[in-house]
Length: 339
Ligand SMILES: [Zn+2]
Image (cartoon, rainbow, N blue to C red):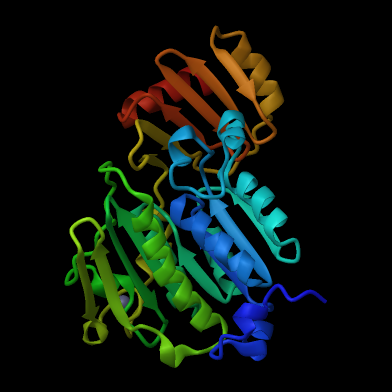
């Protein structure tokens, strides 16, 4: 037996008993960008039992400045983020079970995962997914930790079902930064600060030390040297559609699932087929090669370049159309080349 967790066990609030608990826990991280990378690495180093990490995108050069799990080689190969993440995380701690899911988290999948995990960490970049996480967490009684950052600003809040207000309760009263898509740029210390808040809360939850949870909504701006911690307990709403007495979990209804979306901070549109399909990428490669563009394929996705657009087609049928922010243009291009 090695002593890889000795320093964590020497920390009295965790101890050997806490470490035992941590080693049995299953954590779900939605998003494998900057927040997802840093949360995943720390939790895997801390020795959780099982990690499920979900992301819909692949590694690009603009990610490398802050997304700590990825290398130039990953960007070169356009590896899906969760595949690159799993490679690195397994090298860091081979005893953790790691499930990598290349997907745009859907309502069905989120509910399935919520039934199995002990904690959900929000590392997404979009409002819809956060609200879906919020509803799934409430419905299945799973704690989740909200986190967002943009520029030098960051925000985090820990949501415990049937105890704290949920994200939906806070929406109208508290300014929640990072909920809208922003292209203002980001510096890595803002990421790491949010991750520090999320991780400390995560460790408390994993060892069952709920009394030590922060309970306040924290936000900061590292460049403007501002910090605030707001008490929000009183904002829990009786009539909240997600956590109130008569709940309807509006974000878990299929009608609210976005089929087509402009991606955050990117000149790109994602198109998701209304019914799940499995694309034969090899066959598609041959078809597209005859259409005059440049085709590249790795085991997970196919990239098809026809200036000034580039398509990235995943096995689950999702397509990213790069080079446009116009949904109808993207759909027309999709139908032209992909049926
Ligand atoms: Zn609520």
